[in-house]
Image (cartoon, rainbow, N blue to C red; front, side, top):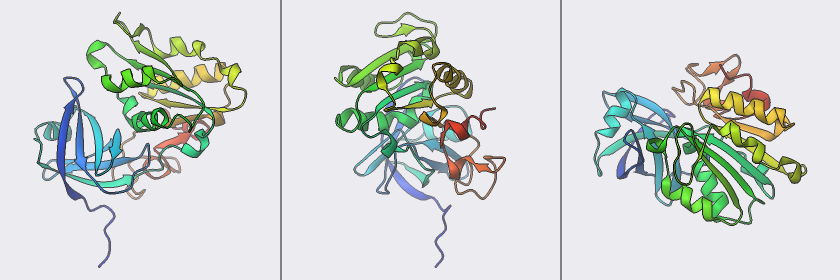
Length: 266
C-alpha cells in the first residue's frame, strides 16, 4: 500500500490552555519526532485545514498556540478536551540548533511569533550548557495580548538569560513600553566577538524593521535566522501556494537564513 504523505491522523486533544481571550494553546497527543521550529497541518472534517507552528512538545504530546481568526480556528476553539484533532506533518526544516551550540543567541520575537521559537527557548533555558548566554527581546501589543506568562517568568530568572519584555503602547509591571526595535541597542553585540547568532520571528513588518536594525548594528546577514508562515497548504512543496520564485516556504523553510529570507518579505 502506498503511504499518503498528506493523509491526516486523528489525535486526541489532551488539554486546552487559554493564553489570552483569543489565543489558546491546544495540547494534542503525538508520538512523532519533532524539530524545534517545525509546523503541522491541523484540520477538522468538513471545516478545513490550517498550518500551525509547534509551540511546544514533549513525551507523548505536541502543543499548538492558536489565534482565533477564521473558520478552522473557530472550529478548533469549539472543541473540548478528549475530542479529536486531525493532524499531519511535521513539516519544514526547523531551527538550525547546531549553529547555536556554544554561542550567544539573540532572539527577537513579537506577538504570536513567540510560538515558533518557544520550544527552542525552553531547550536553551533547561540546558544551560548548550549555548553561552541568551538575549531575549519579546514584544506584545498590550497587557491583554501577553502569551506564555509562566514561561516569561521562568526565562527571566534563568542565570544565563538576559530578557527584555515590551508592550507597544502600555505601561505594565515587568514590561518596558515601546517596540522591540527600540531595545536592540541594549544588546552588547561587540562583546560577543564572532560567536553569536540572531533569530527574528513575528509579523512581516516587524521582521523587516528588526532585520534592518540588526544590519545597522553591523550584524552579518548570515548570522540572522527568520521563520515564516506564508499560505502553506500541502506542506510538501507540491501545490505551490507558498511558492515565491523558486522557494517553497513549506519545504525549504519555514526557517530561513536572512540571506534568503530578505527576499521573501512582502
